[in-house]
Image (cartoon, rainbow, N blue to C red; front, side, top):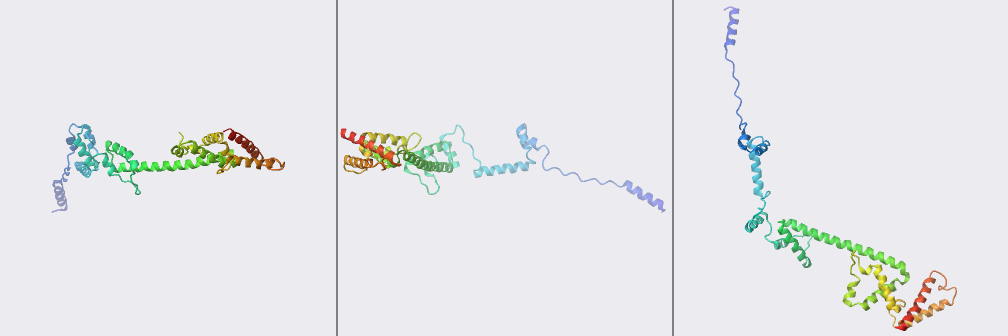
Length: 294
């Protein structure tokens, strides 16, 4: 066979050989319209299905929700028309007390704090509200703990305010009365003890005004009582406390001052004590006169 014939034969063989067919495309695991089949006429559900690449993903989501429901992470809401039996069962599912007393019994406070007898009526009111609102017992305990925390903070703030107001008032009265401050304060206490019943006098000075301040630290109140004491008991404010004979004490003090009056260079006439001594002399004379008339 010639070379030309050989080439022609090879060409005919190639031309007449059947072409290889490619493998058929693998069929999808799920049909392309699976979302339409699942949703049917529900357009909202059809849009939600767009979030999932396949029914497998949808099934995984459903399984996850089932586990959360079983574990109690998701709980059903109480129906609006639930019966008492339904409510009891619903509370039991959530671990809620059957009644308000159950909240008090389950109360757990931090740092060893216990519920005091005086606080039980208030906490019982809280418990009734917690039961009506189906509150978690842990949240109820946290609420009561916060109540005590705020109460302690309020008491501490009040104590600080009391100290500040006491010092402020004492400073103002000291500026006004100077060396006679203690005498005036003693006179106020003696006046209250003399003219008020014991059970009232004990509470009067620690009573609080509308702004929360103690009455006994109010300088206006102290001045008013001191003025009454000077009017009704003039001797008591001018002689040392504890003297058995106030009139004799006044006479002795007048004699001391008159001795100073006889010396033109004494404290009665000169120096920083002059004004106070002269004022005291006049007050002693007035007190002796009032005592004589009484």
